Image (cartoon, rainbow, N blue to C red; front, side, top):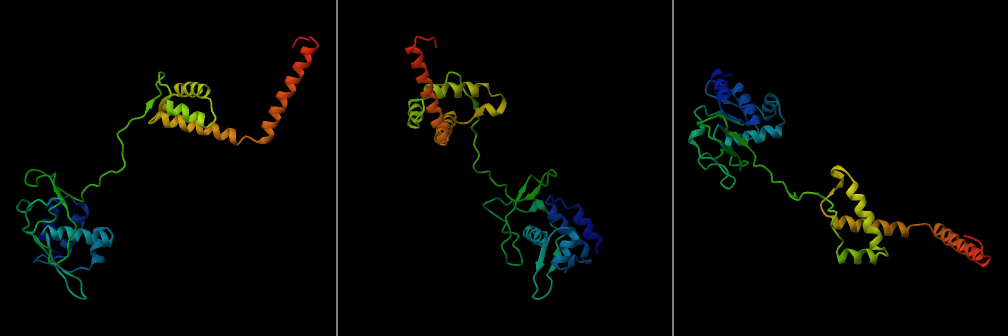
Length: 238
């Protein structure tokens, strides 16, 4: 363990927490020349992270020139801490530029591009992180309440009639219901689509009504008409 290397790693302004922990692990194993050769599993255990996280962190600090790595076949790699590393002397990588060509990785691999934000020579706002992911499929539209003066278009009226409904009966019920619904539940993005869904719902209920109910209602109406006719024939009050 090198006290000099540990002191350097602790004082280094690097806000990538995984990279900082891996750098501490390397410094804890370094000799007086800043060299060490711990295995990846040992680095991950000292850094308190998984091996995949430690591997990516090593690639990032290697790409920045903080650590130089010498790969060895069948043995753990040799790491050399660059205690003279100064973040003010490197170019700031961007999304398109990737890693600065002035600090190529010794392993020949292509490290994950990083973004260095802020100015490390001015304050501690410099961070090393992955590019933020864009949110997809979002909308800026806002739901609104039903306007009491809103009236169905000719297309909506034709849609209701095409389902066997009377728009003059369905629309007033639809309007009064949604005007009375309180809070966020009474807001919709598309009121025409909501009205079409209501028409489909009413048409589906009629189509799914049991035949026995329709027959009983029809027979009940016929009997009522028959009784009314008999009373009229006898001049009885209805």
